[in-house]
Length: 432
Ligand code: NDP
Image 1: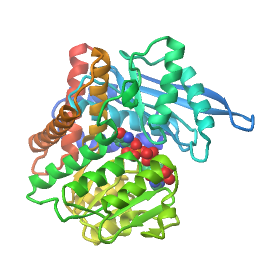
Image 2: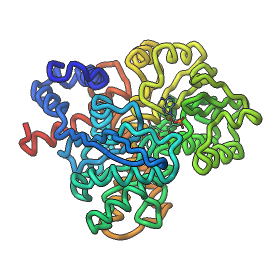
Image 3: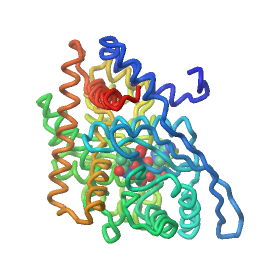
């Protein structure tokens, strides 16, 4: 707090994690020391990105890479293009990623990066110019054995392609230093689907643990990017009823459930046309003015858009309308007031670091495939995804039982399981 009094988001994130680690911290002072070491990122880099738009006008954006922790393996985490980016948010997301990667049990450290660049409304050529300019700085600090960035908000296979192309030109290497690549040039099968599918698997395990079937449940989902799209697809497959999807302008509400047919239209609109959900208002109910889907009555909510997208008032709406479970597809989806309400009203709550770890887990498998220059079979990847999510769920449950003092919650379990592994690596390596 003394070092970074202005980093509100980061201070908020650290304090939420510290609170849930308290049973462990009170047990042994060495864990307090480990936490103090961990919350200071190993490196946080900013750099200027100069690029030219289609009218020949020059722009300067700020690029970031927070290499948070490498005690378990090389830095690994997304790249986000978002005009609201700042160092405080980057550090929060990098810490979250470090904890998530620890939970996957794969050899990956944690990082996060990106730029305050807004890809919305930019031409393909402008996005390419920006990605090339961004990579001409970033390539100096990444590589397959030290830091492997991947996709996040505003960065999909198109942007990864432009960045990877520039990385290969600058380094004369095609060594898989980015994940989220297209299958033809080094990507893994099931990567795009993995976060959304993994989220629904985690939800299924959590419900099953409480003797609640997923089938027939009415579920609100936010977002309409790949995480939301494949969560909706998996929910339909498992017999749940997905009611909503959103973008930053508003949301659609299908009272009888989003059908596969409607989902296909949404995928085409978002992935190919890069259009707005509002354009579907003739075929499905649409709520504009930046409204979020948390006003719709539901039993389960899956936030899959943006950090802090469930505020206290949204949590109250959800609870009053009968919601009993929340599983996070987006990172740090729920603000601290919302978390308090979930706890107060005994909601089943799956934090993003556990529930959305499927994407980075398959990125870990993409790294392995690139290293040995082999492609895994999609069925094997799907089975690995199921297995990894099950192991994460069990790790959270076991830690919650062990340290919960009758106050069982999957979120504390996730934080404790992730942190214990990181702390023990720090001790073994003599870093503290
Ligand atoms: P996308 O960028 O493809 O989609 C993000 C979605 O959130 C879009 O529908 C977007 O709408 C909406 N959104 C963006 N900003 C806001 C805002 N301020 N308020 C409301 N809605 C907003 O990202 P992904 O689907 O890849 O990721 C979604 C979330 O999941 C992110 O939080 C990401 O960090 C997290 N995540 C992603 C993983 C992955 O594998 N992709 C892995 C783990 C977590 P619009 O189109 O209007 O911008």
